[in-house]
Length: 57
Image (cartoon, rainbow, N blue to C red; front, top):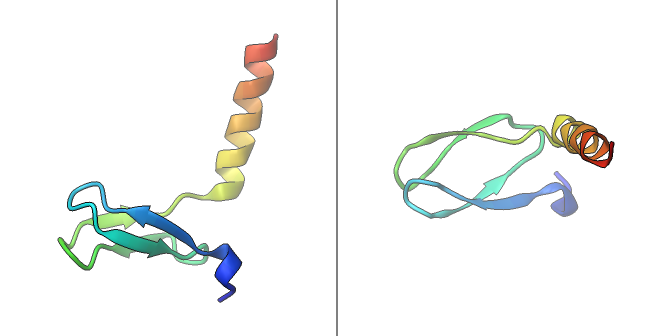
């Protein structure tokens, strides 16, 4: 796993710092056990680009 592909996120429930791997879509917080879903960056970027185009019109 390349270090540049890692993201650091906070658990929304206990605010513990977590590592998000791009190849793992679902993970569990080690502090409180909350199940978290990783963001699909490709789909998210496509969504943002679509919204940007709609706003410009």
